[in-house]
Image (cartoon, rainbow, N blue to C red):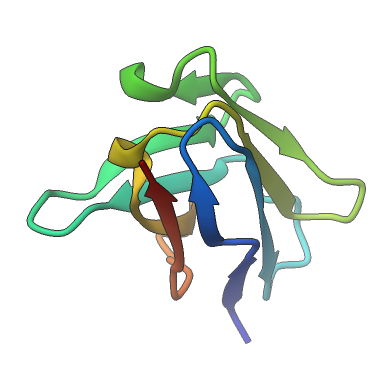
Length: 112
């Protein structure tokens, strides 16, 4: 069964940090392209950070220098370390993979 399960969202004050986790199941192969998108109320879903099929990383302009994506030791897990959080980072964060699947989303709220 294909599942992407996120965890780690929550409420944090501006300037704080959070770490999101995603575990992708349902594949016997390593999923190369895996990462994070987010959607704020009234806005389109946007790229946060992903690993590409070639193993490189790609970040959205608004999070460069503050967020870091990394892979876990377990197969098909990925983390998002979010530092120096801003109120505009408030959104539902979704895990995504190259098979086109999405997680259920985890809420991140940054208070000013």
